[in-house]
Length: 317
Image (cartoon, rainbow, N blue to C red):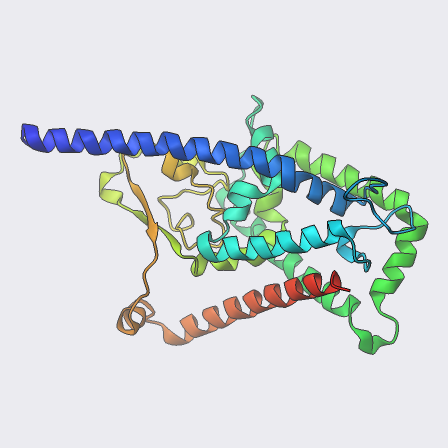
């Protein structure tokens, strides 16, 4: 049994931990509100082709409908989107997929919708594991389409055909996008972050940063009281105490809900230190499997950087 002095120290540590949790939750709330008010309009206007006719973000494009993702014209709004992309990359290097957990307007809205008191749908574990691979297929498909659409060797880039198509069927495309968004938001009422879990290609790209981010989370299973609060609060529907819910997992969106929900101080956050080569060799016992896995991660990471460079370069006159 611990003495009075040890109990006093434990009590002080728990008190400081609770205070830090309150501060972190407050910071997270303010961050998400700011993200909704600033990044939200940028995402909605750019992806749904909403034409701004006046003011600082006025669109100079003569067509009635064009998505910023495929627009070749240099404008203020396009430069803001390019700068936002570079900011996301910097955030990923620091804290992994934290953009999804803290800044993505789509993820924030899905979290709010999931709080609506309706009967939730529980996806079976095996089916959930299979469905989570879909977004990687979507990401590969998008990468292929972007490279092919901007390939000048084909004589007439597909991107040019897309502009003509949008000029003719812009209203129909917009209605299809809005209808799809409504369906996905409706699904978020019953399955938490369904778009993020199963379909989002952007989340699939930046999930690779989880392996190399500077921010690290440690688990102390010995102090766990099996309350499952971390599992219930996880935005991605993961079990933070299981193998799929590790900090380096490609599925973790770094929402820190596990950290703020835990009252037993099981999780600790700190900055990653560089590991020695001997430690890496001990951990990676199956060298060829490890090399292939890391090579795939590097390919995905490089494709993300290349596509990002193309997006930024496209907006520069």
